[in-house]
Structures are given as structure tokens and as C-alpha cells.
Amino acid sequence: MSKLKYLFPILVIVVIGALSSIFIVDEREKVLVMQFGKVVKVKEDPGLGFKIPLVQELVRYDDRILSRDVGPLEVTPLDDRRLVVDAFARYRIRDVQTFRQAVGAGGIPLAEQRLDSILRAKTREILGSVSSNDILSTDRAALMLRIRNVAIRDAQALGVEIIDVRLKRTDLPRENLEATFARMRAEREREAADEVARGNEAAQRVRAQADRTQVEIVSDAKRQAEIIQGEADAKRNAIFAEAFGADEEFFEFYRSLNAYREALKGENSTMVLSPDSEFFNYFKSDSPRQ
Image (cartoon, rainbow, N blue to C red; front, side, top):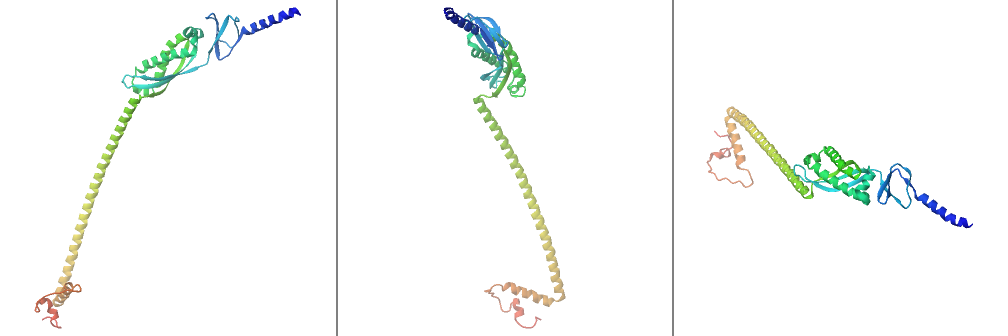
């Protein structure tokens, strides 16, 4: 019984030591076995691993593809048209031992800071070698590939593999953006003024043509009216002449009656004439004038 009393704690210590010497590596991670700050083993395959309890410790790193957003970056292309660029990169830890040596205990946060510096420098270098039109066009895919390729070499010192680099947004700086909007607005206003001027010119041509057509139509109508009136007057004179030739006395009587009717229009018509005036020849007797 006394032996069991001492054997049980020893057994517990052995079990705890055995369990603490075993570790599990997930398929989504890589593990470094550290001893006194030095790497003694790298475990990349998923499964069980072993270490010396209390002497060795584990450092785990994510083996998946990670994303890193690069903050807004101002670049100056060849045409000196400044642009603000937002980019992001996808990367993974390729060599965990090199990664540990490069960043130490800083881990992924420190590595991403250094990765930001690399991406910023290479983005400025590549985008500064082309014009702004190339950056804003569909050729951006080739530019992003160039940035990735030159950044890969520098990232190898971190034990990191850059898989992809993308430009999320490419804009003008705020002050340049406002100036560009003002210039675009001025261009649109100038185009609108040109359209209005062309419209006014076309309207003047239409009005001038309409006025000319109106004058021609009115002149032609007056000419035709005068011709018709002239023909009517000629016919009337011909009728008068024929009537005068047929019965001169009756025609004279008829004309006198028309003259009386025109002269005595109205309710208070007053005429002052000499009694022997020829105007009243047909009022002097009931018989026709001899």
C-alpha cells in the first residue's frame, strides 16, 4: 500500500510528461519546435509530433492564403498626373524557418508591416514608369502582374510568397479631383453653349426662310388678286360699255340713281346744291330728259 502511494504520483507525472510531449499539427498550419530561442524542428505535415516537455516550445503559423490591404498610396506617373491607389495582396508563408528568422517574435503583424513597405515601394516604382492613361485603362492587369513579380523577390527574404497583387481603386487626389470636375463642367458648359449657338443659328435660318416664304406667298397672292381685280374691272367696264351702247339714256338714268343712293346714305344726309344743277335732272320732271 505504501508503494502504491508513491507510485501513483510518479505515474501521473509520467502521463502528464508524455501528453505534453505530443502535439497535433493541423492541416491549415505549420509548426516550429523551438528550444532556447532556436529552431530545432519544422513540422509542416498534418498529424502528430513530439517535443521535449518544458524544454521545447511550439510556434504555430497559418499555412493558408492570407490577405493584406495596403492603405491609400499616392503615386506620380510619367505625365505628373498624381493618382491615389488602393491595393491589396494575397500571400502565404512559404518558409516558416526563414519567416521566423526575419520577423522573430513579431510574427505576422510585423511581417505585414514589412510587406506593406515592399508593396508600396514596388507600386510606386512600376506605376511611376507609365502614364496615368495606362494605369486607368484595361492594361492595369499587366501592371499588377509586374508589381507582383518584382515584389516576389523582396518578399522571399521574409519567407513569404506573394500570390497576387490587385489595385482596388485608382482615383485622383481630392484637390485634383475637384479641378478635374471643374474642367469637365467647363467643357460640358462650352459644349452646351455651342449647341445653343448652333440651335439659334438654325432657328434664324428657319425663321428667315419662313419670312421669305411668307413674303413670296403674300406677294404672289396680291399679284393674283390684282390680276383678278383687273380682269373683273375690265369685265365690268365692258358690261358698262355694252349697256351704254345698247341704251345710252337708260344707262345714264341708272348711273344717276346709283349716284343718288351713294350721296343720300344715312339718316341725316344734307346736300346744298343749286336748283338748276344737273345732279337733280331726274327730279325736275316725270318724263325722261330730252
